[in-house]
Length: 440
Image (cartoon, rainbow, N blue to C red):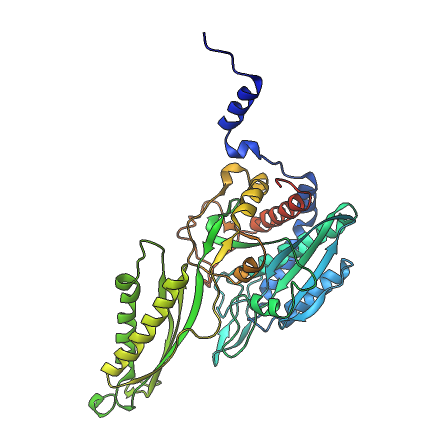
């Protein structure tokens, strides 16, 4: 006869057989559900107002003013003018506790909207010397509306709230225009975390490739590092009927674009980590029968590994120089052009701790780990300063395939507004659970 195991051994065996989610299962807080229901219409109204009145990076004057006025009406004392049009405010709880930060971005994109929404943008602006449409094609209008809703909920419960919450409304997440500074890195350089050093920072992004009602998050690397580049190929202008009378920068530029594709496909070990080299715009010439003097090209590089990044930047500079020379042209290559974003890396321990909070809002089956994303964001700078968690909120309505839905940055990007409710509940649940010490 085998000896009967002691009670402690039986308990340990039973616990080890439980799935991790059962050990840390968390319920949605009733105050979160109540706040979401009470604030739903207001958050939708904020989002639609921002959507109707989008502003490009470093030009968010009206958006920042509306945000600051809303915070003042809540009884907060916002600081404005940080990194251009940044707005921050602190909600101080009535009980001692941790410090955290919550971030939303406010800027829009140079995209002409084609959604047909009754509150669609008709705004235009100047961008890189061209008149362009302006649209919240990435969902930052939703992020700003959600964080205002979370702010209202936190203010309403602050007497019983432990700790303090820094609300960060950030400009220029899409990148400052050439020759300017902006975004998260500038907010940090201007002292965002100097007087208020949070233990953790949280942010979200509505995402077209995630179905509405779901949340996607992963610990460790989540989004790629991004770098911009600008390449100008200079030839010699001539009549289109006499190409031998000049140097054709258009043919040289076309050869450069094609050769640059071999950097990733033939020179980069993408079996280890993915990488992307994309040309986003090419401009040259004004008339059908004139070979111009020069062609300008801009694009982006996405990587996860710093050494891979440096190698790709060097390869692109090399391709640009030598391909242009082979055509008798010269080249000016700004590779990279300005400051890029590092990879967004979620703190693994923090993400594991707060995953049950997200699942409490949407259900365990609707909170999942996505693959690495080649998209990038400057939330990465906050994540380099303090432990951080950034997560995706589904934006594509049920019945529409997220794989084929118009993506973020598309003129047809269409947000299912149930994402506003999910985003508010998720960010508020995460904030309250962390402040109360859940999962610590």
